[in-house]
Amino acid sequence: MTTQLYALSVDAHDPRALARFWSGVLGFELVDDPRDGIVLLPDDDTGFRLRYLPGGRREKIGSNQAHFDMTSQSPEHQAATVAKVLELGGSHLDIGQGDVDHVVMADPEGNEFCVLEPGNNFLAGCPFIGAVSSDGSQAVGYFWSKALDWPLVWDQDEETAIQSPHGGPKITWGGPPMDEREGKNRLHFDLVTPPGGDLRAEVDRLISLGAKSLDIGQGDVEHVVLADPDGNDFCVYPPR
Image (cartoon, rainbow, N blue to C red; front, top):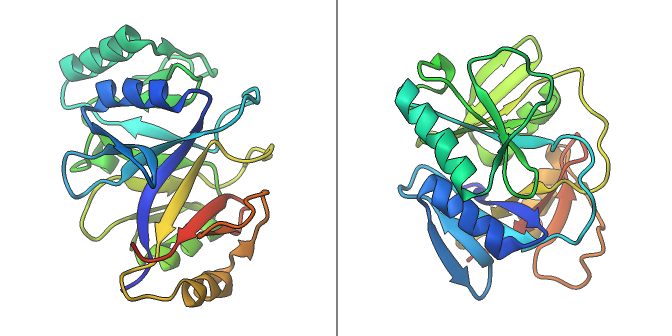
């Protein structure tokens, strides 16, 4: 059994407020976990949890490396999602998208996401969060496919996507051109070593696939911080 994607963690100025916003939008249960902080649990076993962490007061510069693509079942569903986002404190966002059928929005801390139009064939069968769409190379898509043992569901023109064999959101990488990274990502993956597994052996396996050790000032902690081949930080935790 290989490493599992435990959570998508989000650095936030106000983790509780941001978690409340996304709980209202997604309908996920908000849980205070003494070990993990503020966590949103998906409403089925095909998704992954969202974890909100204190992320300092740095100003947001440019777009995030990754954002949510949210699915819609009908035009009315899309409009209702947009209305709910605005009601809870989100906003419309202009990133130069022009006249498109999807709606680009931002949460209260400026994190971008898209509310897609109904009939998106690529995300057919995916849950409300249909995809975590990422800025990244073909090589990093291959890395994450091997790291999580998730199959490639798209590999064309240097664009890649993976998905758990059990379904759930896809993780996509758009290929070149890629934006220059500026500091630590606001969103990062947290992996957990499977029960009975060995953290050090798992870290060695990920390094053999192309990851690198990373020091972000984490100090003496139970988890290991690594960077994927594109330099995106992620954490690997011992068995839980």
